[in-house]
Length: 93
Length: 205
Ligand SMILES: [Zn+2]
Image 1 (tube, each protein chain N blue to C red):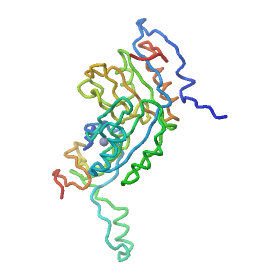
Image 2 (image 1 turned 90 degrees about the vertical axis):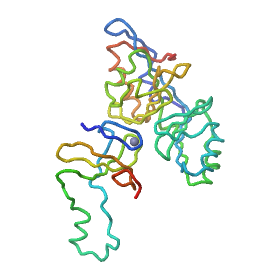
Image 3 (image 1 turned 60 degrees about the vertical axis):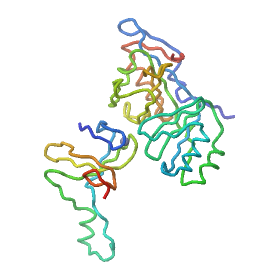
Image 4 (image 1 turned 180 degrees about the horizontal axis):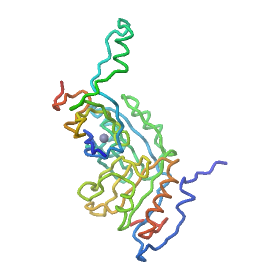
């Protein structure tokens, strides 16, 4: 079980959260100009990184906010947590 | 004819049963039929915030998981732009609140019929709650004038601390639970409290 620090509520049990996949995936500005392979890449393909991975979590049973987590996929250690719209160093972009 | 009936009517009959050691260390009762309103709005809009405090007579709490209250309302932080307004008496205010709040980018939703409150207390309340709740309930973490949305027995609950008269110590907790899960939660609490002895239906002081 992970203990995840919600940027609003503080440390809470993983039971209260839902996982939302890789973070910072930008929707293509003009999808109509993409071919099927590029659109498929955007929709379905993720990095599956070994090491520090930026991912989205939702405090589903708590304040119901989405936020970002940098988690090490080898050790499961959570390196940092930051609100949507902020950068991983904790400052607004 | 329609009859207003508590969702816990079959569970929380006045009853008491001593525990393994012969004592009664857990108490539980329902606080039914209160006003529950969900309010959403922009905390950076000072006009919205002023409107809320003049209608309620108390400020909307801005610190996460904190509670403000007066003699009529208890206001719980649910999110950065979301609050639960609990009327301490039954109040018919929805129409007026809607009129006032809908001048802003906001929403008021009536939840009174959709959820109820179970108050638990007694020496063993932390142990009973911890049997199926991952929240840190230690006095240094769960303090007076605090609330927390979490899970208890796989059910979403909002916990609200109830303090002693001086407001220094948490002596009981109110669990705000959805109506359809109240029966399940009541039965789970009965099962969890069997060991320490329980008493239901009586006022908790
Ligand atoms: Zn949260």
